[in-house]
Amino acid sequence: MNRSINLEKHTLRVMMGLYCSKVHRRRTLCEDCSNLLGYSLTRIDHCSFYFNKPTCKVCPVHCYKPEMREKIKQVMRVAGPKMVLRHPFLAIHHLINKK
Image (cartoon, rainbow, N blue to C red):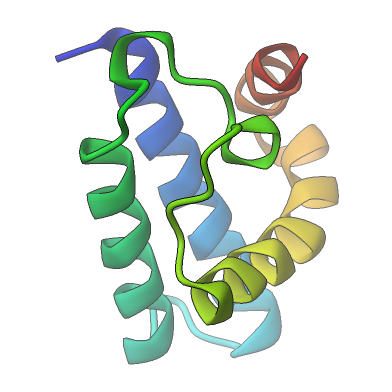
């Protein structure tokens, strides 16, 4: 499997964990966050740009359903700032890939 895809999936799992612990006050992912994570991981696996995948924000093809896209944006807004302090390597890698 593509190493950058694995790293993107790991980053997504970490961000979902940070989001759910902050917003839902859970130590493990709640059902809604688990469903969103599963949906997002599936979208990554089926990405048409798999080997040259940009971050979803700058991707020319938005494959998320509109309601799921809004949910993942909210996760990014909440978890993104926390990533810089808690997981700086993942945050920097994500920012570099966004360019």
